[in-house]
Image (cartoon, rainbow, N blue to C red; front, top):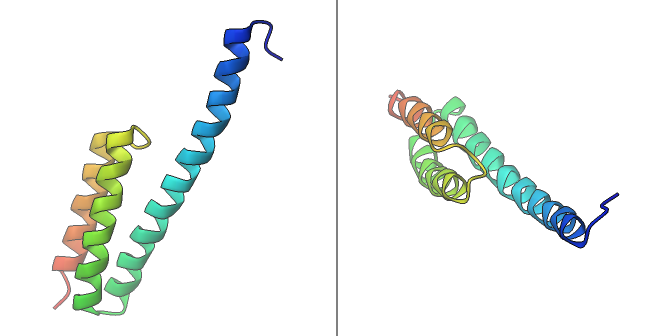
Length: 87
């Protein structure tokens, strides 16, 4: 338990940030899974639209500091390669 008022505030802020980060990461994982599912199904149109949505969410997560920018860039790159590999 926090012994100072500032430490108590930090603990409260950490809880709020944790919830926000979890929500962001959940949305990112869902978007990535949609792209992968479309790629497995060989549906190029839905894969491209899902890739666009996933790219936005990944860059937003990187901007907020939830994901490292290189991690987000790597994920976008790999997803793009997967989508481009569809016939």
